[in-house]
Length: 397
Image (cartoon, rainbow, N blue to C red; front, side, top):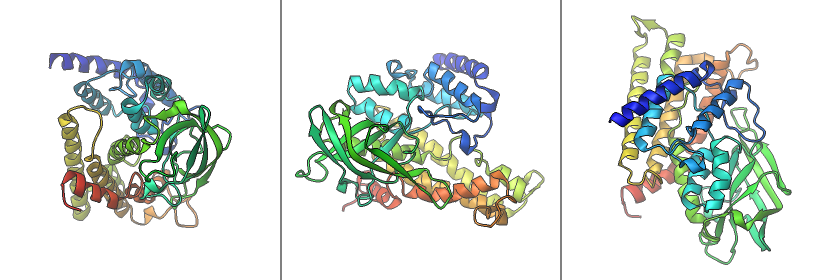
């Protein structure tokens, strides 16, 4: 306990002196610190904050120091999180590198792959995207048809991926390819990494109902990828893919915990419903906000207990499906409460003139539209319920 007290004091002092004031305010959508070779920072402090946190290893605090982390224990990581929350600090770095491919490489990657990729992820130098879903292989992911054919020290990759988040800005991709068309559909898959600037890679953004284009179609035409970038073994990619999905689902399940502009129900209630004696004036809205906060708190405590009970502190396991399902449903409910409070002020994305609406109102309605995708990405809610039934509850098929 004494060591944690000293650690808290040291971290608190460091954060107070190193976190820019502008990084202690809610984060607009156009200031998300994804990093990458083509990153442009609207707020210069975003890059300053990323660099300072990366130098301490705090962008990936529990990763080993040799891979760019701080080597913190679970208890120390919890203290760091509490101190960041205390000063309302934004995340210094986000993205699939940290939440998905990084943890997978720690578990399955070779030492050479770890040393090549993990420090770059920790420093925000590379933006990653995920090459999983295909036009005819969504929920049935193992039916994928993108092929990889041996050619000396390389594989030649041909095929198509869809819903490739951030592919138009990504530097590297972690991709599922079929290396053995004669094997069973799960056994013939290989997990490989390659650069998105390699010849033969092309990307086409997909415009969504929210008006944004975070997803893309990605095409591979005779793309050459080195065999040295195969993660785990050839033909064993499905094992890596499943584990990475568990990391992804845990990350998606935590949605809404970040420091985002549309994060506070209480502020929205004060603006759109009004207060009486310091309380939300409308009884029904007050009840809905209170219930949402109770559910948020119970969920956060459950996630914390799961981490503390984890024997290894690494792989999340099948319980990640529970977090993904509940977290995304909770996020959707939160936006429903927000829009109910806003009333007709939530119509900014569907009326002829958006100029009559504030940026907050437009972003909140777009966030509500985007939240519907939470129940699809990373595996649909129906898939998660099946996994919970089989792997968590042990119910018969």
